[in-house]
Image 1: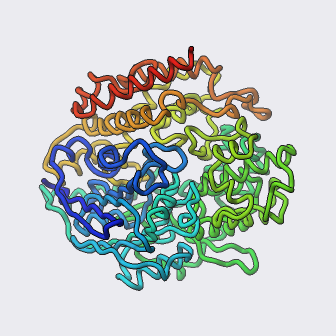
Image 2: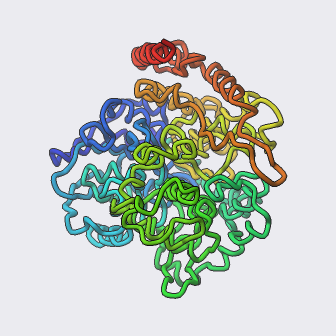
Image 3: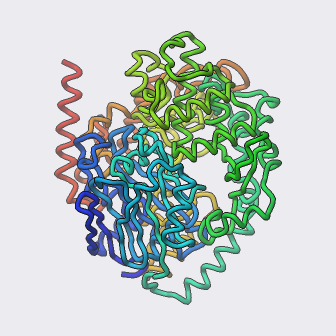
Length: 632
């Protein structure tokens, strides 16, 4: 095998043992690496039944992409487990250098099972895996944990760590890589916390065999320069996603004030402009403090920048906030001050929480409070009023949630469960399948609501963007299915290769790099089948878990007409029937049962996955029984 080591490390924390085994070449042919390998291994090792926070019923899979450390911008590492928020398989990614260093440490994936009696961290170096005590790190914030683990291993190691939120099983706790990038979605930090696993550190310099090493060297330089000089690459290098607030306002896609104001006047949007953020960029001397981890492996774009708040008494160095941070820690909660957002971002990262889920959950509480659907007596331990724009309340809630104190213990369950516990607010909770929505309102773009409804993990803006930018009133959503599927499958391929999604990679460059590394000449259309295979596995798992097709929908908030602005009256779909028709048509286009949303046996056979047919038939039977009982 070329481009891979063929080695998987299985770490059993309950027994404090590690096993190394080889994986068949056919698996890499079908699933490539990264996202593809995550879902293959997760499907094989994680049972559907059982609470995600029960370590005997879950596993954490970590996988770099096939091209990690071998291609420009090969910076993405993937984590997968059964999500504490959704109860289904969920993958999430972080950039920088962890992916390459795990690959160069000699492994194509880690499978972590069980739970240690005492806190531990895992150290991987050049084919060796150690389980080390971490009781002295338990309780530390993310930044101190990363520094502590590096001091005990290697300065050049890359560290994926959890903070207090993960330790306290906050269902949207995240995994922070080197303290600067988040594998943020789905609450996988809580899965690590349930295992008493504080961190994973990796280091190595052991490349896999390359089919055409000289060709790869030449290609590396050519592609690097191509990406660096591309106008889109130059734009991304300067701004990253900082123009997102300007864009969401223009197209009425903002989550402002808990999704009640998708369109913002220019004078409001300008408060969180790219220029406002870049004006707080740290001096170049500060970049030395994070040398080796601030930019992704071989990145020609280098969009990450460091920033310091101008807020007196709070000058912590932090990676500049990208759009999702500005939107979910700013717009969603009504905080329109960049310095305050930098402060909140630092806290959320230090505690180890997903900024998207945290922002949605806090904004939801604020709407309940302002509508007098929740009273002060219920907000135990909270000293500041949770009103939109109250940054002090947001900061206080971050601490209460991370340590599960007072009202924070309820909010730590995520917005869907919090609504059930309080017995109100479910109709305004913005999530899909239990996963809080990212910061792009689908009422401003036709077909985006369908992407949210059918995405493998729940609400995600990274599972296929439909082409065009027209509003939903321009026609039925089903007309966007073809472009949605292509973008979804291409993104799945990018995640399987371990490439960053922002550099403007061309299809022919991907094909050439794949051939140089593996020795196999495969067209992009064939490589993109990994997306179809991954989704098939995800839907079988979710159907057995009771989330497909019942939860292939969107929250009611997105069917409320936009109240003002040039997109006034727009909804995510023409009507609920438009959603249902689009979902059925999507199923047919994918080769799924048109009512049940489960892959058909002939589809699995075509994808080379006959071994999954029995599970698919079981899923079809279970869905049929569930839906039949609803009609009785």
